[in-house]
Length: 233
Ligand SMILES: C[S@@+](CC[C@H](N)C(=O)[O-])C[C@H]1O[C@@H](n2cnc3c(N)ncnc32)[C@H](O)[C@@H]1O
Image (cartoon, rainbow, N blue to C red):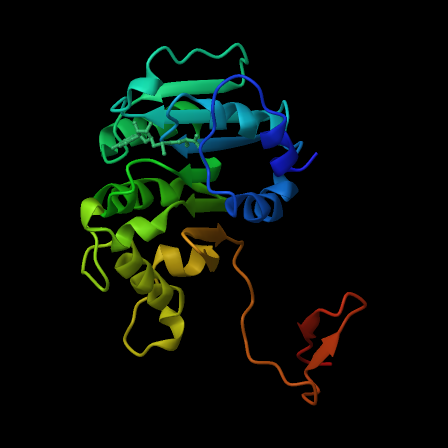
């Protein structure tokens, strides 16, 4: 069953997502299904999305939700499923977030669907991203809020998440920029995917990066099409 089908068949607590997020989620989350992993969702309202992630990812997934309880729907959150955990706290509270990481360990999947205020989104990202596992992903939903005055936003306004993201694109490319130092973000991040209103940061193991030339005798392709450096051959 894909995520859209799981959403349509869902009973119990309500889930609030944009429809165009579903195929994107299916594409990026399908590789995690059935695995033992930790998922963190920031902002859970009544908790329906936590149930959806758990049923989609399977029994081995530990699903953790946090909410500051500013929304009345978050009261009385109670799950029968032992794989789902809920903690009350503010997404910008570093002490709370570090306690969460100590309690559950690294997260493989993080979804920020909290306040969508740039300062909160950036604070959570900076506190949690270093604790995303080696091949994990960090998703920020509803980044269009960066353009809304109601959300401290505005086009090209310094301090918004979109402007922060532009800086992260530069940081991903630090090794090509004179005098720029390589950060942990540069070395650990494999890609940043930007969709309408949704951004996905994907971590990856350290990869060998070099320009390669099919006529260079020091490179050969193996049966998988991978190119290997063959010094001394
Ligand atoms: C859009 S709702 C979440 C919907 C849910 N993820 C879903 O898919 O059904 C946003 C939630 O973020 C919570 N929230 C707002 N500010 C927050 C903050 N600073 N820290 C944590 N949660 C926050 C609100 O209480 C609300 O429940």
